[in-house]
Amino acid sequence: MRRIEMKKVFKGRTIISGTFTGECVVSKDGINFLATFQKSLLKKSKKVIGGDQNNPGLYKKRLDGMIICVPQSIGSTTGGIVIQTAAQTGVAPAAFLFSKHIDSVAAAGVVLSDIWSDKKIITIDNLGDEFLEYVKDGMTLEIKEDGTVTVH
Image 1 (cartoon, rainbow, N blue to C red):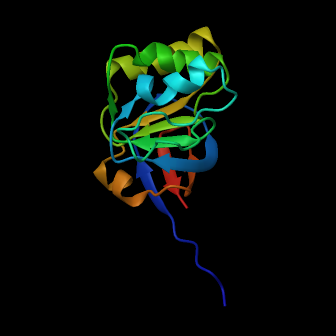
Image 2: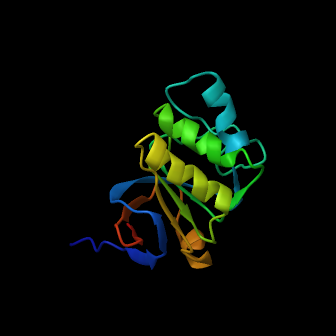
Image 3: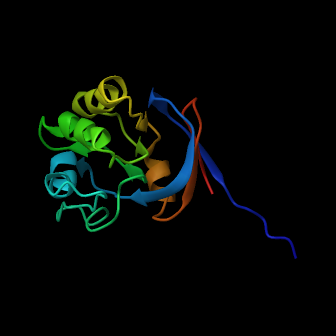
């Protein structure tokens, strides 16, 4: 009996383009970059474990090298520099996929990571509410340069 592979395709707006296939971590809550990354960055850890107790979708989960799927970012104006610091120290996620519109602070962080650190964090926004309802922790996602995300 042949197994039929189920997949669903979503299209968003590319902020930082790239191609990547990997595992995702999903939160229905917005990501607070400082609360999520601060503890790992201060310890100069070689991996990032989500540190935001107010975000059960990311809390205590490994985030470096992962595809992080969230509705939006929340928190302070430090978010951009936190993203850039994670990239510069080699512990950034592979990608951020937002179901809603990215805010300017998060966008600045991924752009600065790309320019200042030569570390690309693929970032796509406006993937829609259906994307975040469909995707689950551990699913394999395939990201294309044009903002297409295929969920396997």
